Length: 160
Image 1: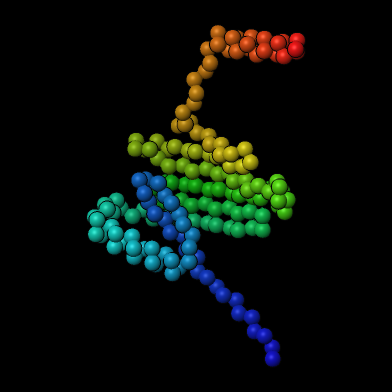
Image 2: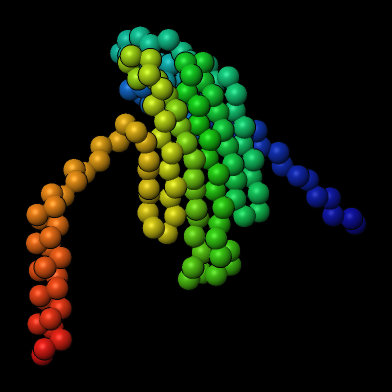
C-alpha cells in the first residue's frame, strides 16, 4: 500500500490593529483573524470605542528566507515601513544572532513626516531620527576635569 502525503495549506492573514495612532500587525491563521475580528467588533460596539475611521493597508509584502525575512507596508494615511532580518552566524549556538534593521515613517499632528530608522542586533536596539531627544553636550570644563581625573587614577594605579 502506497503512503499518500497530503500538504496542509494554512491561510495566513495580517491583521492590523490601530491603537493610539500606532499600528500593530499580527500574523495568524484565517480562523484566528475571524475570531479576533468578531471580538474587536463586539467590544467596540459595546463600549463605543471605535470612533476613528478604519485606515486601509494599501501595500503589504512579506518574504521569508532560509536565513531571514523582509517585509514592508504602506497605509492609507501615509505610514510606510520596512524591515529586513537576517541570522548572523547561523548554526553557531553561541554566536547566532538575529539582526533586524528597518524604517518607519508617519506624520505628526501638523502633517510633518517623522522617520525612525533602526537596527537591532547583538549590541541592542539602536534607533535614529531627528525627532529623538539627544543628550546635551558636556561643557569643556567638565570634559577637562574628567580627563585629568582619569589621568590621575591611571598614574596612581601604575605607581602601586
